[in-house]
Image 1 (cartoon, one colour):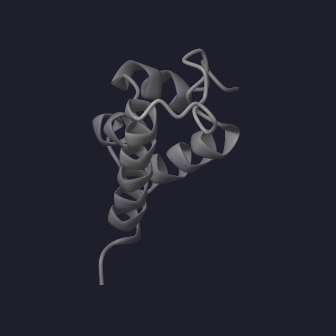
Image 2: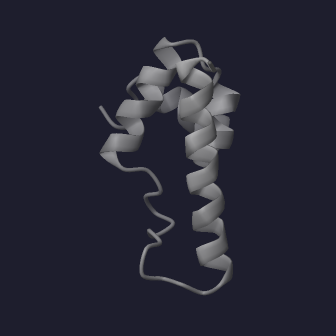
Length: 80
């Protein structure tokens, strides 16, 4: 059985791939503005995954954001 962290990251990567396909196809109904890519749920999950040992780079890849953004979220600078 896979580690819960690995399973969670794989699920996020699949979701990101689906969203990228929708964007490429021109579907705007489920895409968010570029101003805010992450939801409160995303941020909570990101912080949980970090506590479980995920690296900032892994989280950045999974959520399609810059690793600096992940760092600021984890430290509470963004999304307090």
